[in-house]
Length: 140
View 1 (tube, rainbow, N blue to C red):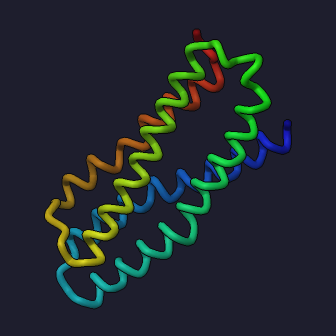
View 2: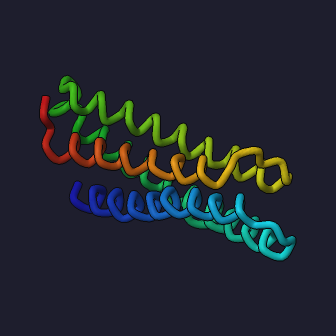
View 3: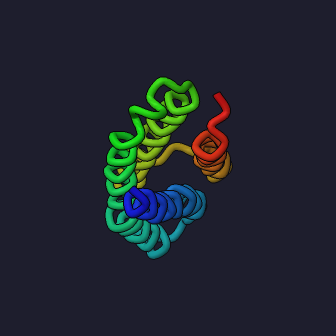
């Protein structure tokens, strides 16, 4: 059980590193005007999303499901766990939205400003705070 928890946390950190950095790259990409910079951002975004962020997400969710199977008899009826699972679903939705935005940039069809991406970059912070507080405090 402790190995599952440790691996879950390690890959969660990896996933969140990508969730924090990819939208920041989108900010800079949206500001880029020269072809060399635009192509560099496309490469960086693709490598981050497919090489670090998505494997981190998959492993986080996989080890999390292992923890969930182990802990369900103890915590399955508690509201904090259900809310945490909802926040995780929102986080997966955010991850998929990042993929959609990545594709828009790849196809040179971004229509959003760098300011929009700065605000977009804040969503995973809120989700992280909620998830960690629920998992740690188990308030209800």
